[in-house]
Image (cartoon, rainbow, N blue to C red; front, side):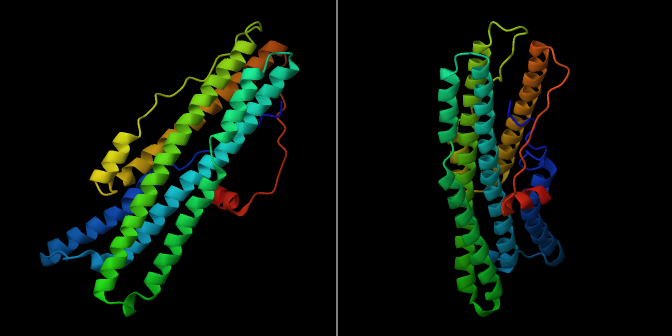
Length: 280
């Protein structure tokens, strides 16, 4: 079987603590500055112009986390397609009926549109370039222009972050559903084999509209917490798949009465984003 067991021990989107510090910590820093200013001078700024640089940095960081979710989703999806194709190949080699598994593998292949990755990348690049230019020419702009650009930046990041996070959650739920049905088909095809192989249970589906409503009501602020939940959902899905992969290998060992199974991984050159991903 060509399936890559534990395709990567780095196949977790973002660590919970790191996400909390980065996504919540930076806005928290701004709140701390506001509180310190009030306690020391008993005044607060009348606009967010005074925190322009903070806002520029914060928006780049949050946009990066949103893009990272899309990158991790596409990276994991490619492996899921390979994983299902490998199990289908194994079942076919055992003389089993693989029609349902082949259909689900094709469905999995179509579930994530590669164009979304490039759209997310373009959105991230736009915010980086825009914020860098604003930071460079900040001292040459009027307070009115700074105020307009800062509010536009916040709105841009809030909208793009909300749409990306909703998309990622929707896709990971669909991936989870397809894998659950696929493992059921694989188990059904091996019904006459001993021992019996189990399946991956499908996660309870989350409706997207309450999250979208909260983002609209809070003007995007809820998205800072929602991105953490999306990362947690993806992490949970990946870890559940790891568990099932171990069960499949143990089942194969018991069925074929072997002591171990060699898992061959064909090395390939990592692209730039994957190198950054491993570094982080």
